[in-house]
Length: 111
Picture 1 (tube, rainbow, N blue to C red):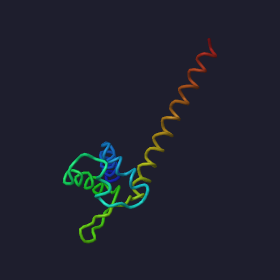
Picture 2 (spheres, one colour; picture 1 turned 60 degrees about the vertical axis):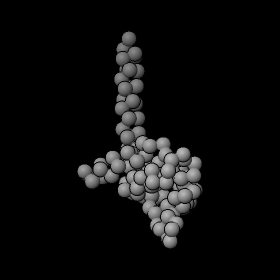
Picture 3 (tube, one colour; picture 1 turned 60 degrees about the horizontal axis):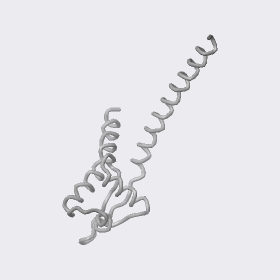
C-alpha cells in the first residue's frame, strides 16, 4: 500500500506543473522528440529536461535515445492507476453526498 501511495504522490507531483501536463497532452497524440516537445516553451533545454526526468521518474512517460535524438512516449499504465484512484474518490464522495441529501430530505419531511 505504501509503495502505491508513493507512486501516486510522485504522479500527482508531476502533474501539478503546467509544463509537464502540456507534455503529457502532446504525447497523447503519439511519441515525440524532446526537441519538438520543448518548442512551445520559453525555457532552455536543460530546464526542460528536468521536466522530462520528473515525468520519467514517476512512470508517466518513457524515453529512448537513438544517436542524438531522444524520443518520449506516454506510459498509459500509470495514467490508469491515477484514473482508478480518482474513480474511487469520486464514488466515495458521491456516496457521502447522497447520504447527506437523504438525511436533509428526511429532516424536511419531519417538519
